[in-house]
Length: 334
Image 1 (cartoon, one colour):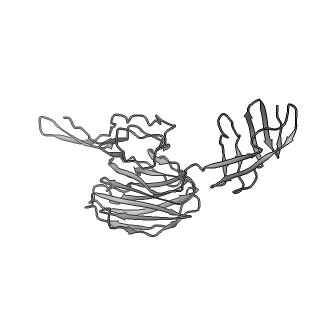
Image 2: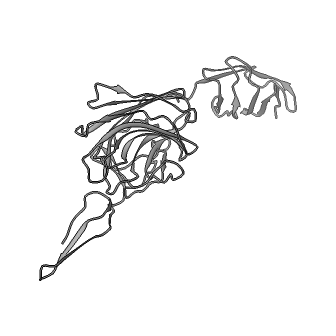
Image 3: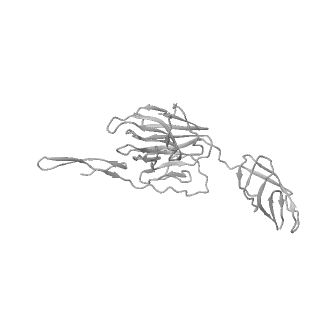
């Protein structure tokens, strides 16, 4: 007798043996089906800019984009046919038992954002699930997903829910909605505004409904992405993600910094000590930056305190046969 499993996972098939006299015996066996491993997740061009959106074309994830993949299990996920497919495993994130693999995440800056994905898959057994994950560590996270709720062997039932934990403590907020298992795919949107997280869902990508928001003040700057697992499942299913889109996010464009020197060239002879300073240092986004000053000149990193204020600290600048160090308003040629 031979049987081929198309999905990875742990199965308990029934085996019945009958002898020549017609007597039979039945037993269960444990079978684990493991597919070929997915290719490694690498960042081939780290100097190139990559957007956050992913259509899941090709045959692998790009680590330049998915730069925080927690517990990758290459035998239980793959990118094929324009989908990211994650096989559910009998694992968990709740309480202190965080062991779920294949949390596919991108590091996000602090601030507000809005992301969207489309998920499909026969999540029927409780608690098979797949959706959007906002993740700091195993102890502190928020998830918004499609979840199976049926006991094993019972007709499929599903819901869409949002749950979260802080320091391994399950939080008393349970926004959810019962949905029909006849829908083959669901669009999910997760929006962050301050400490408030709002989930929206759609069965057609056009008409959206919203569940009650959740407040979590520990997830600013947390990673964001997609995931799937099935903590009490008896068989594995595959949850498929068609895309991951960032609808809005904090602007991460490096600021444009301009600076002028007064005087423009060193005017002291060898051994001279001349007081000079940066006259203007303007930046549309005050913060910490590293920039060059002209052709072959280099400025060490400094702190921009406000637009138009004088620079309190700057590294060495080389030009001609003079070496000037600008710090606390002083310049030392030679």
